[in-house]
Length: 200
Image (tube, rainbow, N blue to C red):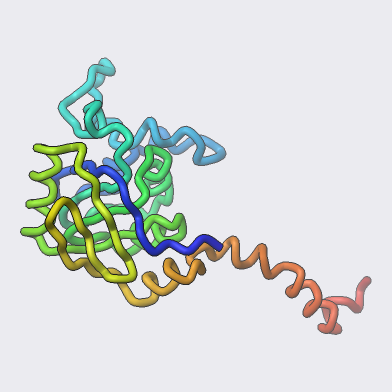
């Protein structure tokens, strides 16, 4: 399992409170069998008008292309529980999200992708967002072990639940991967259970 202790990269700010999962990825793009290709539809209606012309959105700006740390405001990911929302962000290139607060189900879905959601104060988030708009090339480091985010000469404290932090650092965040890796042992144990074998 992959242990996630630090994530570094350029940041991209997306301002606004209560940005729900339908704004992260509109429902009409959720008809695919797999999650492949969802990245191009992240924030689609906020990025394009009805004719497909680009709007003023950070995901459209060349200076933010290649960014991997998303910086957001309050209650990000609220609304439905659709896992397509974090999947689209991950496929756009996001590896970690810094915000004031997150919808619990959204943060849990991000956790299952190894994409941590850490929280900071309103003031610290807004300062970071404004800083990124002025200097998109700045590198951000999210340190889960130290519960901190650093950029240039600044460092701020961030929060993440102890259980999620532990799973990321120990590499046990991928529950599906854990189940698959435990399959041989599960099969061996199943052989010892009479009612699972009596009809063979």
